[in-house]
Amino acid sequence: MKAAQIILLICWTLVVVLLVAVLVAAINGWNIPGIHFRGSWIVSDIVGSGENSDFDGTIPGTGEAEVEANGIEKIDIVWRSGEVLFLRHGEDTIKFVQAGNNIDNNQKMKYIVEGNELKIRDGDEKWLNLGRWRETYLTIYIPESVELVDEISVSGAATGINITEGFDGFGLGRLELDTASGEIEVSGVSCTDVDISSVSGSVKFEGIDSEELSFESVSGNITAEDAISDRVYIETVSGGAVMSGSFREVDSETVSGSMSVSSAVCPDRIASEAISGSFTLQIPENEGFTLEYSKKSGKISCSFVTTQAQDMLVYGNGAAHFSFDTVSGDVNIVKAAG
Image (cartoon, rainbow, N blue to C red; front, side, top):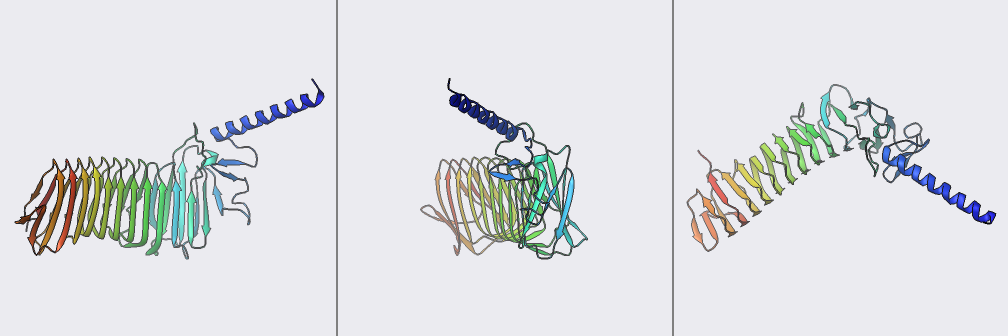
């Protein structure tokens, strides 16, 4: 064999060995000096260590960081490894703490302040994540002096999101929470817009006041107590939803799920679609509504004294408009006592 061919064979062998080593490192979360693997990112070891760094800080193991609260209007969090908990404190800074046992080097918390936005990540953004998953928790402390934030967004949160303690009357522009199997709990917050998405985790809201409320769930249950909203949207597959409070408009879609809405006022509009799911609406005495329905193998019941015209039930002046489209689902309109 010619010398040139031998050299070429050796070179290609070395390339293959190097590529295999890189793949093994990516799978196991090992670090090659100077390089960490995080999805499509190549993050150098100098992240957080200099003025030209992409991020302001990298916190090893169990650690904490804080930034001045003044000027922060948005908080964006991607945290796939555990629970995210919001608390209040008496300082003037936004403080965030990562906790866990034997945190992998690739899961070190990192953050950046871009203009008026604080971004926090658990560092676990590798496209390959086999064998080195460790649960970590994030606690965020918001100053008690801060009464309004334009936007809070949390996604991932494998074991839950909690915004309850000390947040009565806290003002938000937009609240966006997204989790797979973790439980979401929120109470006492006033918002312009709330967008909640969950796969199998439960969602619990109490005392929330928002112009718009949007809930999407596959198999988790949704509960909202003492909620106030102009517009509510609920979508479930096999999970149930129980809503109580005061609502002006309600849109819902469900497959094999039950829907229950109890409103202190008669909504101006309701539009519901259900397949093998039921819808129960409890409302007080009111001036009137028109109920339009399309059903297959389901039944409609109403405790208000109505007149019927084709596929419509009319009560009083018929001003409010309710529309129900069901397949193998029941619709119950209940008059609240008193």
